[in-house]
Image (cartoon, rainbow, N blue to C red; front, side, top):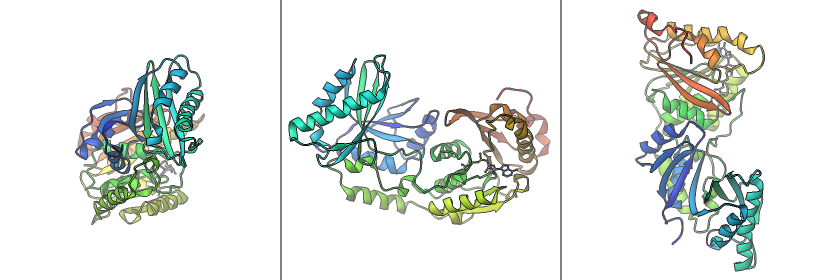
Length: 396
Ligand SMILES: C[S@@+](CC[C@H](N)C(=O)[O-])C[C@H]1O[C@@H](n2cnc3c(N)ncnc32)[C@H](O)[C@@H]1O
């Protein structure tokens, strides 16, 4: 039976600290994970199922379909096991593949070496059975075979995604410190925004948060923006199934009747970039773009709307001091101008977050690349609750 119909363990990976959001997203489509752990979810499904997962999931990085699990205590054991696998049933001898590995084993300090052993195992099997072999290299354009090896257990997968899903495929012109699309989507899905009230995003930069909010509100699957996936290079792949899935997902898109998303930045070129990115994502008409200081942001009467800031983090010497009054002004603005809203600040500088001066209702930990980050949530009452929202010197 083709792997496209055969069930096997599926590992859906994501960036660190995103599994809880990925799980919520996954369940929202009616699926139940078998388990959730710090690098993603485990489930069971066919290679055909991976097509829908690749197209739908906003917060995932890769969808791995398991081929084999074995014991290994040395790269030679990995080679022997790989050579035993019937690769001629899944890879085209005239095609192309690459190998990626994650290795946590005391005998290995260079995982490149293990990748080579995996490649050798596949190639030697082909030479033995078929007399010719597919090409291989480092580009992820063809089939991608993934090895996860930790301690004595090793797992071989097809990486059905190929390129990472964390970057959504609309052609994005990055601005300064842009958020990765999967991270931006994860912070929005963690917020209390329901897609039906205003989403106000001053300091929008290249527009990632506003665009991801528009994609969520219009139920646009992020995978509709790309046309190259690892699963397309596995024997038995049926392009008509993929095309039908895309048509089904396109039919789910809704055109919101009201403009609910507001994006602004102090820099006109950033707003222009954000607008172009939104156009590439097909959501320009859903977003109101403005150039102005965040203090001039109009807050629509849309309770309980969401006011979402992603200010700069000030990683370089001296920048933190300059940013302190900006963070304080963000706190003042939220408190005085957005009654009834939920306020959010996403920052990778916990020190600066203290300058906001309000008591967060939730502090949700994330990473921005390698930096510790927090999504801070504020319940914004009108002036009467001042005493409760003012931040004492609690650690963020
Ligand atoms: C960290 S970036 C936002 C990145 C954005 N989330 C993205 O993914 O592209 C912070 C943005 O705040 C803007 N900014 C700085 N000071 C501002 C102010 N006083 N008013 C409005 N925007 C400001 C900067 O121009 C920059 O684009």
